[in-house]
Image (cartoon, rainbow, N blue to C red):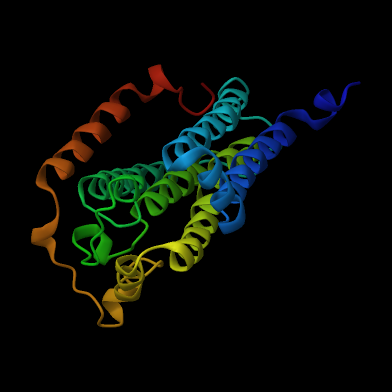
Length: 236
């Protein structure tokens, strides 16, 4: 039996998550990132970083989706769990699209253009890492309804990686980013609603993007309608 066969599906999913997350975080550490930018330039570094991300995430997704519901059975799914999954997915889509529609100094675009803002708006008043929060909720939502170890490793990885990469990005940008990034971090929070509860921020619902909100609802309706055909349902 080869090492690959001995790992099993669960082991392969875990290895690919470690490779994706490990290279993603290692590549953005200050020493490695600085060396690569000096060698390749900022655009070259971003291209290599994206290439490595795709080269590790695509096999991760392929391994899971060709071996769904693998491993030990953990619990009996329920109708209540399915409704909770759907609710979390809607919230995750809203957060993801609001994050894409709202400027932030922590994005690649800000770094590439040199245009930074220290003023948080919209969803960034809730958390400075809406993409991490959105994908983390996506992972948790699926874990609620999918009862196999392989499912939990794949989708749970989104939640674990979302937290770790957010913490790592905060440390890196605080060390190397411009003054605007430090000001942005001081006025926002990693954990959702922490800055609002502490009085640093307010909810400011008028700052949210209406097109992004509509897009999230439409995306949710479409995904819910075609989920079985696109991704399969439980047992599919």
